[in-house]
Structures are given as C-alpha cells and as structure tokens.
Length: 541
Image 1: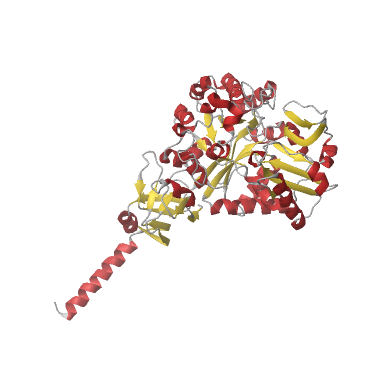
Image 2: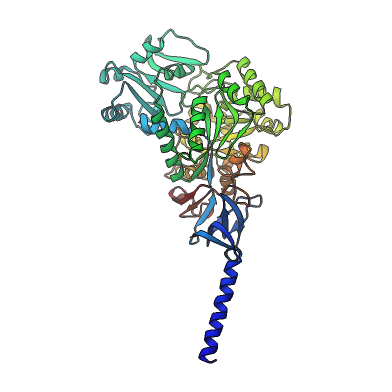
C-alpha cells in the first residue's frame, strides 16, 4: 500500500469514528469495567451503567454501554465491586448528629471509672450547663450492675448530668436532674421505673421516666441542629449510606430536614417516622402520604416495651436472671388502638418497637384487629428480638414485616442467654426464620445505639460473630442470612419497607442513581475480611 493510500485509510477511519461518536447518546456519567451487583429480581450482574439526570438509563456490559453512550464524566471502576447505595432501615439520624456535636461518647467504656474519665475530658473541652453522655453499658463492666449517681455528685458537684444507656431506654442522672424532674425513690409511672438501692433513688431511670428526665434537657439552637444533621450526613456518606429511615421525629425536625433538602444543603434521602403524639400525627396525616424526592413521610413510630439490656423488654415469663421482673409495656391499649386507627385512616404504616416476646405478642394482637389477614400495608415490628414460638407464623398471617438490626445480635449474644435462659434464647435474634415468614426483612443499624456502618450490619447478618471473629462457629447460625439475603436487606428490602422499591434499592433503569464502590467484594471475599471493606466512592443522585 502506498503512503497516499495509508493516509486515506486513516482519514476514513477517523471519519467513521467521529461519525460513530456523534451518534452516541449523551449522558452525565458512565461507570464501566465494574463488578456490578444490580440487586434486581434475578440478582443479576453487570459491567457498566449510564446515568442521566440522576437516574440509571442503561445497565449492561462494557461494549454495549460504551458504544451507545458518551458522558461528561466516566469512571473506570478497575474491576471493583459496585452495589446499590446502602440504605439503613432503622436508625436515629437526627439524634446521632446531635451526639456528634453535643454528647460525650461513652460507648465501649469498660468500667464506670472510664465513664467518669471520659466525662471529665468532655466537660473540659465543651463546658456547659448540662453534662450529657451516651452509650454506657454496664454489661461490659467487671460487675454488670447498674451504676449509681454518688460518684457523679463527688466529681461534678452541682452539675446537671444526664447519661443515656447504649439502648436509649435507661438514663443515669445527677440529683440536680432528679430534683428538676420531680423524681425520687417514691415516684411511680406506668411504663417507667426508678431503680432504688438502700432506700434511695440511684439516679437510674427506665423508659417513660427516662423520657421525663430527657425532656428537661434544653433544645439545641437551630444553627447547632443544622450542623448536627450535616455532620450526620457526612458520616453516613463515608460508610456508603445513601438513604436512611429515622425512627421517630417531631414536626420541627422533619420540617428542618425538608427545608435543608429544598435548599440543597442536605442530599440524604430521609424516610421519617413521625412521633405518635396527636399534634405530630395530625400535622402530617392530614397531608396524606408525603413522597418528595428526598423526603418520605408515611409512617408512625410507637413503643411496646423497653430494652433487653436494661431488663425493660416485656417478656411472657420473667427474666431468667431477675425472676421477679418480666419487663414492662410502656403504653396502654387505648393508646395503641388510637394510633393504629389514625394510621389506617390516613394510609400510614405503623412501626412498633417490640423487643421481648411479650411485647411482640401483644403488638401482634393489636395489629391483628386492624390488618385482619394478608395485606400490603407493610406494618412493621421494629427489632423483633425475641419471638414466642407460636407467634412467628403470625408475621406471615398478617403480613407484618420484621425490621431487624443484625448487629443487635452480635452486641447482645454474650449475655442475652443469661437474661432469657437456655430455651427462650433459641427464639431470639431469629432473623432467617423471620425472613421466611414474608420472604423479606428490613435491616438497619439502629445507630447511634450500634455502629453506623452497613458493612458491619452485613457482616453480623452472615457471620453472627464479633468483629474479632468470635465465637469461631458463630452464634445460632441456623438464623444467619445468606450473603444475597444480607445485601438485599440493606438495599432493596429497605426501600420496599417504606414503599420506595420502584425508585430505590437496586441498579435498574429508571431508578435513582445511588451507588457505592467498595475496595473488595462482599459477596466473595473471605468472611473475616468483610468488616475491612472500605468505601471508595459513594454516589448520590
């Protein structure tokens, strides 16, 4: 071939390529050379996808996507694993943010002396009228006894102090707060308890009385609340969370979130469960279901009982390690029926915290009055930690969705048997059995009670071990989830749990382009490496 002919051939090839390029469909983003888990109905895999206007417009192999589309931005994933944006089905997003800017972190303290030391440091760095802390857990201490406020008085005389237990259902307060709240050793309240020792109030308050003490704490300034929400969002994105469900919010907080989203200052999608007071329920339920681009309001959060760690969870039979106590119901039936009727009339979900088998059973009884059999209302029982043998099938009978937090199992498994006894523990944290009732579950972290990471949630679901790999054989492994189930439980099934499965939860054409890229494949990596997975990119539509 002559030199002239070679030039002509090259020119023709360039023209062909230019013509081909000009016929490609413009999009905003292409991700290719990826190991994509779409989490669609068939759990299919892909290599590439294209995004335009915040939606997936095509999902397929590299050749098809790259030949058909051209993008302003392209990402070579270099073979890394890509998943739908992780979703948290039950957390306390607003409270978590407030903790970041206002509360001492007491999680993991191995003694009450360590609690005191952390409070000293926090008080020196952030001096204020109130000294607040969250996360203590007496089960981690040499003697697993509830604390006493005597040492608080000695170290912080005259200080208003409120320290919330890790489960949020118990507080330790100073005498100054007891006086302010009008609580002493003789105080009685339905759904609440004062712990008394040697004839005096120790400062430990459970459930409804804990809420009375919490209500004494002054509200944050608006600027602080905005900062708290933004910090919470930043930390969520860092671990791959693109959507969350906040389990219980008031009018002011939901409207603040909405205003920040409208202004582009908050891009996290929030599914907000409303608090069950009449003012809040009426405010939102009279508007009907609220389904905005970044805000969903269609559910109400109620409480059946307390927590297992503080022995407030309602059990059918008494605690194995406290035979005179079977826990407590925090509300009366009139309240539960009132909320359920309002919800059924407004087309809202009811989402009820129930941890003990007595609490679960009682709420299933109440739900049955309104659901009356199979339905698609998707009422939920949050936590569902202990379920009586006869009650598992009632989740299916009334299409009640278990909303679980798999890290509760790994946090509790070292001591839960002491609370429940050898027989009852077998029906605790029974996630696989609960999943089989309706074919799906909602999974979440319950942060800040547990760690914010959905990767830890995934690991707890499949391994049922501490992060250090113990116990070696896992805990009651018959109720572990498969890796596919675990991934669905933090993506598509969370979306389904708030009626968003047509918009979120999988990488499919027409859905919001929320996705995460990890540095290793959760579906194939060795089990002990799962907790080490890191987020390389978290993309929000």
